[in-house]
Amino acid sequence: MEGVKAITLTGHDAGALSLQDVPDPRPAADQLLVEVRAAGVERTDLTVDPVPGRDLAGVVVGRGEEVTGFVVGDEVYAHAEGAYAERVAVAECAAALKPAGLTFVEAAALPQAAVTALQALRAAGTGEGDVVLIHGAAGGPGHFAVQIARALGAERVLGTADPADHDFLKELGAEPIEQDEPVDVAVDMLGGEATAAALRQVRDPARAVSAVNPAIAAAGGRYVAPEPSAADLRWLADLADRGLLRVSLHRELPLAEAADAHRLLDAGRVRGKVVLTP
Picture 1 (cartoon, rainbow, N blue to C red):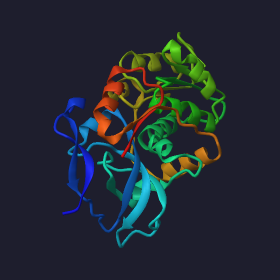
Picture 2 (picture 1 turned 90 degrees about the vertical axis):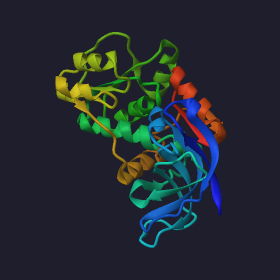
Picture 3 (picture 1 turned 180 degrees about the horizontal axis):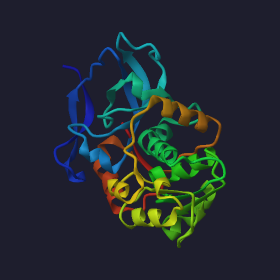
Picture 4 (picture 1 turned 45 degrees about the horizontal axis):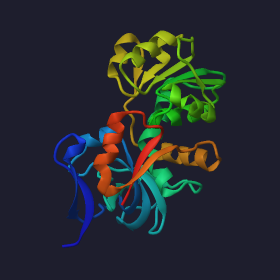
């Protein structure tokens, strides 16, 4: 029987990850078969089993009979469970053509993190002239949120981060802050005290959004659980191709070192994204 290499998960921590042979996926009628060139890493990937991962970039090598928007050979990026593998079946409705100006590694960093940032900012009604604050602005979703806020018309973007990352925030177009300042939009990418700070700093609680803490809703804010969206991936690809969205890569590791990738995330101080390559 044909098979592929994939990371399998037998628990819910980095020590439960190992490289194994698994059956070769077969795409359903509405799916693409994608040869994975890179897979993005998020802490929440360890809630997906038996093969973790939700972000990928790669090349279409097969497709179901109902697929109409892609052909074999297309370079794509997508939301897809089981992304820590050499080949993955991907729903057509969760994929888009890879941004032409990005490498596969850079594109694989985008789906979860950048879509989370975009959907959170839209939920807060971010637009022209707003002053926007991003808590956790140097991390994966946070560093995308800084740039997307600018693209949506924000007049100023403020960000919280470790002092060692303040120059990085300035490069992205954000102003590092270490104390409260009234803002129009506050986006929490950290949870904990950052949720309370977002509510305290925003002028209207309805424009405080958390992508990590549902409890914000009880105080009048909004919780956004990101939804896979091909339309949002296309929007982000256009932004990247216009030179308005850069990807900061903290580390690129081989697929076999997925456990080390998650240990990096658990240790904190990750600037941007960690990506795996088969």
